Structures are given as structure tokens and as C-alpha cells.
Image 1 (spheres, helix red, strand yellow):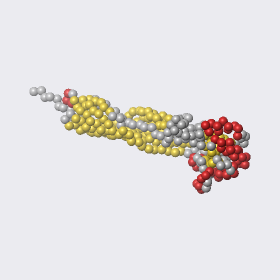
Image 2: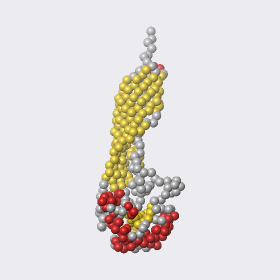
Image 3: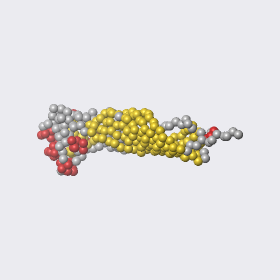
Image 4: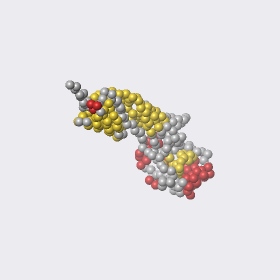
Length: 320
């Protein structure tokens, strides 16, 4: 008497190891405007890890669960946060270092002895991404040592849904696949849509640099264009080390900007002649023009000798 072959059972657990490679991109964006260089950091990765799972079979139906964990080695570097050629840019480093996926599977066994399994699979993935942003030591000259190099680190995780998967397995010849999710990290900000087409307005136009050889007529076309754009303000940098003369230049610039409905906003920065809020207030007050303002940039204020008390003492009517 011939005994029929026994039916294959998919019930049971399994454990294994895996390794592989991958490629991703981390993008950086800047709230001050679109970047001109290096907003993408490429992150090629090598990963290795393990997986564990279990299947339950009832009649022809098979239900399973699986957990994968991988350690990744990845390091990408590029210049970043350069929205203008006149600002301090940075070096951005990024790379994913851990991937974890959890998935459920449901399938049906068929064929001789039920050795073939057709299935669908879905789940979630968690990725940890880390890196840092380091400013470059720029604006060094004979009188200014440049900004100190500071490093800001980030280390965060992101949970995502795995894309649906389907396939088939053949008993004793099953192929294992690692599904990993890799997302793009972002420092907050989207670019503004084109001017006015979507109802956006222009706040300020920059930069008017007032040096010892200042001539108001040089800025005639600049002011006319700002007026055509219906901007609200002109950002001004003071480069003349003679404060009395610089104050005179500001007064003349204020008067030239007034017919276009523009305020003239004096920004204090450590590498110019107007190094802190106290100096900016002194110049704007002495110029004594109704459209004169003091502009506070948080980054420059933190790097200058300006204190919170200095900022609190600024008259609200003079703030941009």
C-alpha cells in the first residue's frame, strides 16, 4: 500500500541574518529663502541585521508576523543653508543609523502538499536619522576674528507605513527580503510662491550698504524697483565707521525712500560699523526721520554684544 506524502505545514518560527546596501538623500531647507548651494546630502548606506518571525497555519490559510532590525553605516556631507553669497553658510552631515520594520502577513498554501504560499504583507517601519550642522568660520578680516565654529546636532526617529507587498514562497526555497523605509529630513520652511501670483506680498528688499562714499542717486533704480514691488521696507547695512557721517547718510536714504512708502530698516551685525542694538538705536534716533527703523535678526543679535535688556529698551515704534 502506497502512503500519500504528508502535507507541508507552514506553522513554526524562523530566525536569520541579512545584509545589504542602500542609498538615500537628506534635504535641508532654509526659512530665509531657496538655497543656492548644497541643499541635498547624499547618504549611501551599508546595513546588516537580523530578523525573526512566526507563522500559524489553519487549513490552507497562513498568518504570520515578522520583525526586522538593521544597523546602518552611513555618512553624507555637503555645504548647506546658503541662501545668499553674503551670509555664513554651514556644513551639513546626515546619515540613517537604525532601521526597524514590523510586518504582518496573510497567505494561502496550495500546490502539491501545500508547499507554495501566496501572500500579502503590510506593516510599519521606524528609522533613526542623525547628523549635525556646523557653521563655517567666515567674515574674518583684520578687525573681526570671524564667527566661532558651532555645531548643532540632531538625532530623531520617524515612523512610516511600509508599502504593501505581495508574492509567493516555495517551501525550502524561500527568499527573504528586508523592507526598509527611508525618509527625507527637513529644518522647517518651504519656498514662497512667485510674487503676487498667489497673493503673496514682498516685505523687504535688501541690501543697501551705506559706506563712506555714499551717494543717494546710486540707489534711485533700487528704490524705484522696491516701490514697484510694493515692498514695505529696505534692509540697510552700515559700513561707514564714522558714526556722525553714517547718521547723515541714513537720514538722506530715509528721505529718498519715503516717497515710495518704504521704511528704512537698519540691521546691526557684528562685522559692520553698526555692531549692536545700542549703536543702531543711537543712529536711527539721531537721524530723526519718521520712516527710520531698527531691524532685529535673532541670529545676529545672539552673536553681537546685544543683551535682552538692550532689545527690551528699543521703542516699539522703531521696530521693523
